[in-house]
Length: 258
Image (cartoon, rainbow, N blue to C red):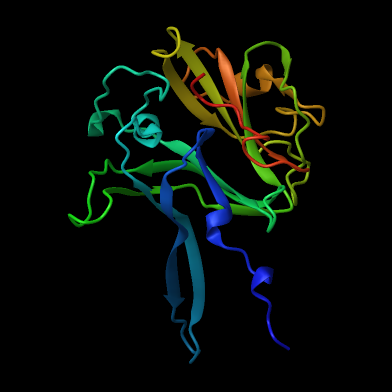
C-alpha cells in the first residue's frame, strides 16, 4: 500500500514560542534528551546489566537575525521585547526561559499536538553564516526533560496575585497525572517597575494538585508555600494545556512581559 504524503506533517507547521512570544523567524528547532548508557558487570553472570539514564533536555534553536529587535535575545537576557530603547546582550544577564511549539493540523485550522521544555538556559549567541547567506543566530542549551502532548497545545496566562485568581480560561488536565494536575509548569513572579522597563524576578515552583483548579483558578497560597528564593510574589505565570479549534493568532498565549 502506497503512503500518502499528507499523512505526515511538515515541521513548518510548528509555531515556536518563548515565554508566550511567537518567534516568527525561527528556522531550526532540535529538541533532544541527554542520555547516559550505564553498564554493570556482576560476578557470576556473563551478561551485564544495562540501564539508560535520561539526564536533562537539550535544545538547539536557530533564528534568522532581524534588523529589528530580536525578542528571543531580550527574553534570555531578562529584558522586555516591548522596550524599544537600545538593548545590551551580555552573558551576565542570561536567564532560563520556557520554550514550546504548538503543531498545526494539515489545514491550519487548529493545534493538534505540542512539545514543551521548561528551564531552557542557552548560551549567548552571535550572528553567523556565509557572506551570501542570511545571518543566523543559533543558540543551544540545557533545560528540563522535554515532554510531548497529543491532542492538546500549550498556552500561558499571567495573573496578578490574590487569594484565588481566575485565569479566564479552563485548563485541560495533564494526561497521566494522579492526582490530576491542571498546569504543566508554574512560575512565581515578583515584578517591580512599570512596563516596558519592568524587572521580573522569577522562580519556578513544583505544580501541586491544588495550585490550579479544574475551573482555572490559581491559588497563590499553594505557590507561596513552595517558594525557596523569592520573598514576595506579585504575579504567577501558568503554563497549561488547552484543546479545541483555533491557531495563532486566534489563540494567543499571554506574554511574560506585558
